[in-house]
Length: 368
Ligand code: NAD
Image (cartoon, rainbow, N blue to C red; front, side, top):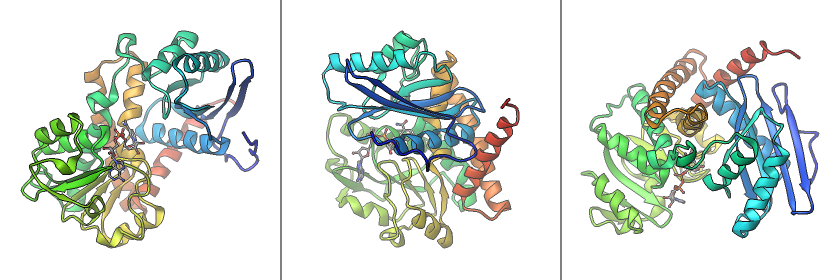
């Protein structure tokens, strides 16, 4: 790993950058604790062969902002183990346990699962350190993708923002890009609230039906392993056509940079809720704002996952998770919209300012 840290950081963090090496087991890892003013930092442990300190730092900052924007008593961190995640089960356990032993004293960092790690890895980390989130159910874990924590938060965001975009949720037309943990649950919660799901895509194609897709049947179809475009209750369309679908609400829930300056002029929706992380480029977001399309940024809309983690850390139940997500995301979406109007800012800028002001306020309570 290249050590290039002189350009990293600003007046809120990072607080610690730790490089870990244990050549006997082939462990090389980095931990960045960005900011802990609001409380111990939550952050995933990523396993990939090509991680950089800069990438881990940027991800840790995203966690700082997401936790603060969500109003959680937590800061942000991230760590990375440089290794192929498809290594053997035995090697993964050795690496995870060695990593965990080396961060045992770093009590201001609460590790969670991320790309290349899972609940089993977190069970090993908990066993070694006494702390981790995203645990198996038998250890008090709450399976966030199973209960649809993030998708539920995305749906709450849509409900709160819809009137601001001049949309009545009941009877509104909804298009969702990506039908995985986030997209599937967001669509399901919104349809149950009266929205009409007119189009959905996955990595292999897309399907549309202007009279509404049968959400329960579509979920069953997808669970059986079939791609959405083979669903019999609609008409298959090209995956990229989803952007131009006639609808009121468009939810990107698949990958980064789904909306760019090259496709944004096709978008017909009035409201875009960012279910995926950074699903629109900065330019695309500005262009949408100019066109009067309301965008609610990722770290407000998809904070359900981190809120779920915070509740799990305190030993809370699944019903407490949903209640907390609803409460926090409702307040934060409203505050973002109000600040955006009051200060004439993009909703993303308003949300970033809201998060920074909470972090800076929390920092005034800390000793130096
Ligand atoms: P997932 O793997 O469960 O689902 C992703 C879905 O997107 C799949 O249906 C896949 O087929 C589809 N997809 C992939 N490429 C596509 C493309 N080019 N066009 C259309 N569909 C495509 O993932 P997820 O957990 O639902 O996460 C989705 C996004 O949300 C990711 O960016 C993730 O980082 C972010 N996110 C997830 C959570 C969470 O709790 N799961 C929390 C915050 C952010």
